[in-house]
Length: 218
Image 1: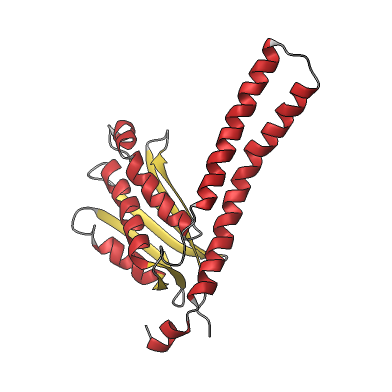
Image 2 (image 1 turned 90 degrees about the vertical axis):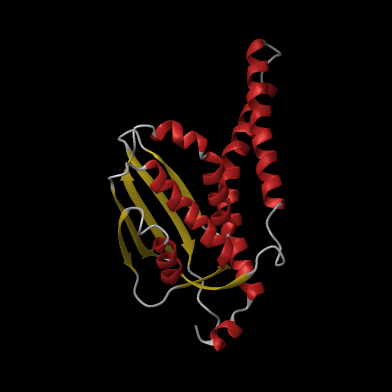
C-alpha cells in the first residue's frame, strides 16, 4: 500500500461512516420490540385488569427488556481509542485468512473482486473474526467435504459466502461453539458489517459475512 494512501485516510471520518451504518442496523432491530410494546400497552389501557391483561403485560415487559438491552448495546459502541483503524485491502485479508486452512482442508475459493477494494477497520480484530468464522466452517463440515468460499462486491459492501457439508455431530458441536461465533459476529458488526453462521436442516454448513467498502479520501 502506498504511504500517501495511508496518510490520506481520515480516521475520524471513517469511524463516523462505520458508526452510521452500524447504528442503522441497530435501530432497525429496535423497531420490532418497540412497536410490540406500544401495541400491547394500548390493549391494556383499553381493557380491564384480567388474566389476559397480565399476559399482555408480561409480553410488554419482555419486549421492554429487549429494548433496554439494545439501548445498552448502542452505548457500548467503541471510541477511536478502542478501534485501531487503518486501511485494509479486502482481497489481501481474505487471501491471508484462507492460507491458514489450505493444509488442513480442500477449500475452493472464488474471490470475484475487480480493482483493489478497501475498507477502514481494525485489521487485527477483523482478521481474528474472519478466522473464527472460517474455523467454524471447517470444524462443522465433514472431514472429506469440499468447502467453498465466494467473495464478490455487492453495492457498497463485499459479501463473502462459505459452504460445506455438515458432519454427523454438527448440531451438537454448533451449540458448543456459539460463544466463538458470537464474538466474531460482534467484531464484524462493530465495523458496520454483518455475519451469520450455522448448520441448515439440509445438513449444509453456511457462513456469510459482509463488510462495508469505504474508499480512501483522495
